[in-house]
Length: 235
Picture (cartoon, rainbow, N blue to C red):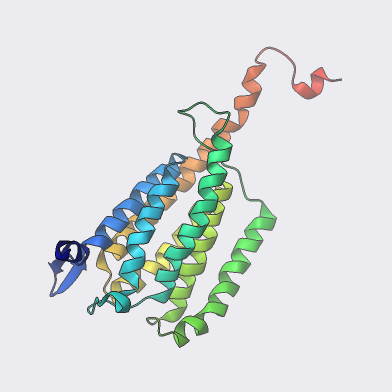
């Protein structure tokens, strides 16, 4: 079974260091999941879970003897959180898909509303403040607040995606802005480059979902193109 160990530890030499192949593959799965999420496809969730499992082994570097890499507890915990919330999102989107055509998107995006926006903003700040000393005590990489920020932001963004809120894309932007320099400084170059790409991708996703909300919303009204609106017909 040595070949399995060799495949698991397959490293590409880069700039005097090493780039773990499973980090690259995990991020490729993450990108595929993001593309599926933009298209509102149910398969985006299980694909993302596979990527999360791979990246979990990457960020727990000390457990897998990946000496050149730093252990990022926030990033590792982020993968566990992704898996848990993705199971919720997978079920929610699959339930929403029922009754729709096979080729149709699973959900129709909607705005979160000011109440939920306030909750997301406060939760991001307070969650970061609360987890920073915890991650520091556990030995996470500095700056620890950035590790905590990416963890909390990722949790909120994934939850927002599961709920179908357009604003979840903007939370990802906030995560990427902090996550790129953190990952680069800690030696996770593949993830840092992918985060930089995600920054542009998530802005695109925001406008795609915003247009989808405006486009899909009136679809119900087209059932009565020549007749009065349901409210007027009831009068």
